[in-house]
Image 1: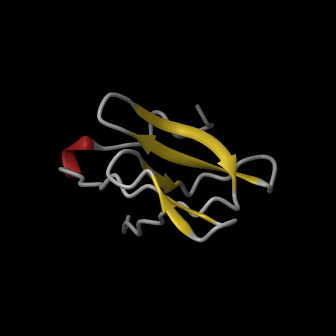
Image 2 (image 1 turned 45 degrees about the vertical axis):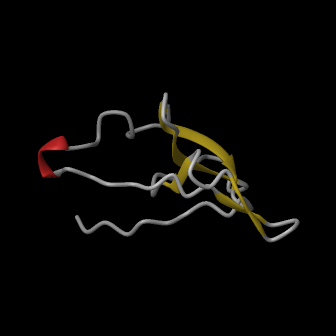
Length: 81
């Protein structure tokens, strides 16, 4: 888990709704894993600028703070503080 991510949520302001939107494969421009996996970039900075943290999930698991290369076409969800 990334720094300051795993404990920085407030379920009292929910419920939160996210779709399993998949991602855009930048090599082909096609959508992948739509309806199967959801990926959303997080605002927490990753130490290496090539990567970024994201929230990932499917019907069986939730990955609240993992990282991957920034060139993946994951979704961005704006949430006001």
